[in-house]
Length: 402
Image 1 (cartoon, rainbow, N blue to C red):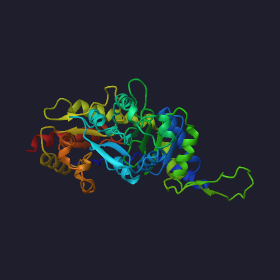
Image 2 (image 1 turned 180 degrees about the horizontal axis):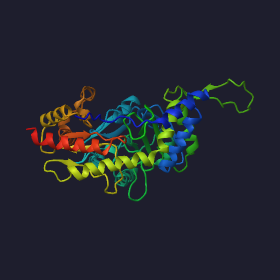
Image 3 (image 1 turned 90 degrees about the horizontal axis):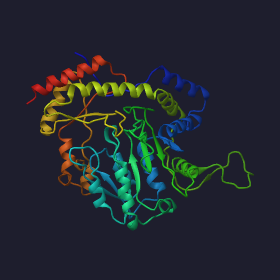
Image 4 (image 1 turned 135 degrees about the vertical axis):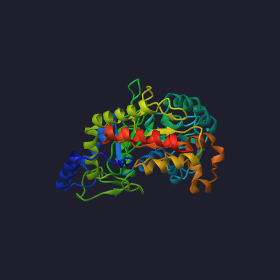
């Protein structure tokens, strides 16, 4: 019997050598490698600037703080996502407004978003779940249609003149639409994750990209975000240039979210292999598609229909079954050596979100997708033999579980 893990990282000698070289350089915290990674992310996403931090969560929160979002404001997010998409709203003191997902999809319900907008709404958080890009054209139409009720808090919001789209692209780095536009240039701000299970990893880490805002200096935004991520510390604050070499200023009480050069060196090496990694993932997804599409009672996402996908998670759904069936299926699959997962348990089902007033009964589509969802192993180190083994055991277990 084979043992198939869920998603081990694709780390090879190239990444190991890059880390050793960085450690031998004596510059191991934030420095030239972190900046190199930000430039590579910007180039990958067709954006002018980006910043790298210690997590996608930090990137998302710093974007909200840069936008001046806080107490008295509202931010809309989907109920079907991981906590990081929503917890940052609470961190900045704003009110979290959860909406359901569209029926039979994993994406936010756009009609529900439009209905939830009030004069207090400052941001919408679409989630590219599994790596498939949301409909950003539709979201842009929604926020444009609400310009007349938008009330800005700061200069950036005033320059935008509308609700910000702060995309959770934790799963979607490297996704590209049929029209050539990529994840990272579609939302006003997009946060990416480099967690160990992601397509591109730095073990832990994240990146933030943003679109150019007319009337706002993008380079100045980058500097402000870097200050936010490192205690608000600025070394270049004296206009006369006469200062000791050690001098610095704390411009405001910032945070501690900077990325280290050790981790960034892994990310640089990974992005240099991006085409190879993505090619392997697409191949795996196509093998799954050939075997599982069309099976009665089994639903899979379409990653090749032009919407754009990073092929991050291969989501399978037993639409007409309940949680008990799904859980039993996963237990039996594990007995066959295959480790599957669930993405995700909707936020209103968690204690923390229940405590602030959310109830899964108000999000029927989210629950309907959750109860039958299983995520199959998919990672760039996976061999065809391993994929075929997963498929064989999937079909065997599916036929046997009652």
